[in-house]
Amino acid sequence: MDVDLPARLARLAREHRVPGAQLAVHHEGETVTAETGEETYAAGEPVTRRSAFPLGSLTKPFTATLVMTLAACGDIDLDAPLAEYVPEVGAGRGGPGPRMTARRLLSHTSGLASNLDEGGDHSGARRRWVARHCRESGTAHPPGTVFSYSNIGYILAGHLVEVVTGMSWWEAMEAVLLKPLDIAPAFVVGPPSGFRPVVDGHTVRQPGDRMLPVTWQTLPKVAAPSAGLALGAADLVTFALMHLAHPALQPVLDRDSAREMRRDQLAGVTAGPFGMADSWGLGWAVYHDAGPDWFGHDGTGEGTSCHLRFEPAGGTVVALTANAATGPALWEDLLAELRSVGPAVGGRGLSAPPDPALRTSGPPECVGRYVNGEMELTVVADGAGGLRLTTGEAERFELTCFEGLRFTMRETSGGRTTYTGRFLRDPETGGIDLIQVTGRLARRARDENDAPGGEG
Image (cartoon, rainbow, N blue to C red; front, side, top):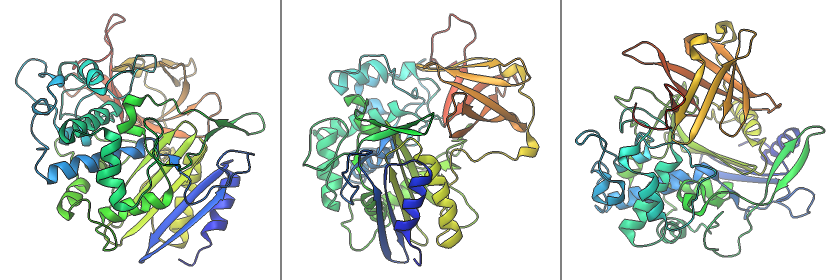
């Protein structure tokens, strides 16, 4: 590529108040890497290729790949009831009917709730945690009916790996996947592995855009399979190239299994991953752009932001790691610049807005309380024809509404990232029954005595 990637990355990092970042691009058979800034703001330790950034949810494609290696060996049937391997999940509500399967875990169609209860007890063995939180009788949606992004589903997928292999998720990740790819592992939580440094995240606060280090990742140990890896941008490129059967890499996953991971898994699903991607495979988001399909995933930790995209037809891969909460804005600007000078990287950002000409007032019938497991979203009228949304963590967002029950949302405290979401009508009653934000689908609570969750 005839592009000065280091200079471009350094400039974007300055513009977005990102203390340190890595960029790796594989294009036309060549991989180029760039690093800029510091692992911790004003601490003097430079970001290097070896620096490991907490990947957040970008851990999920790695866990999905572990599951698929076991499926390729015949140890797991992707479409068998999960209870055959993990009896703790029990039977579905009401007897026969759609069941949780490994395929549904990896494609976020299992029906499991989206997020962990931040105030809950997540200590102890993962098996006991699964028995308490992953039962089929307590799903937020009937399995196989809708896409609803689920961290809990990937915790269960990690437990499935442990049951089948007899190893911990950390041991399996290192032995089965990372070591054959010559990737030195680092983990946010769990047993230490080697001496690879894990960078600090950062928040950017007003006034003055002050950068504040986040020195402790709050991820519970039980949640490691959903967000526990820490790696570098070059490692992410290596991982993607393995999925593309690059001849210089050990084929950890066979071509057919890798192709199945990229196949659209959402046929017949009534609600897709609106605001995140165009569709979803097994661990991979799918982006339908003007040219060939692109695949990838994003992830955020405590003050970190990591992104991966790849395009199988041309073999292009782009990966970014950033140690600030402003990383998503850097990523969006980077994508725009790369598209103007080199590979037309696919995949919109979370903040891609609808057409401003379609803006409308906030429909009053959207007002209400919506729940998904422990996640609770409350939509209220603001008194001026608009809507506001409050989360259970007391975060407040201003909604800008558009035709088709779509909206964008921005933190009222001055956050820089704008997310897209939508309301959905019940096909039988015509009433607004669901809200979808960052892929998570929450159902309207009928009265104040309703418990979160349930199949409705």
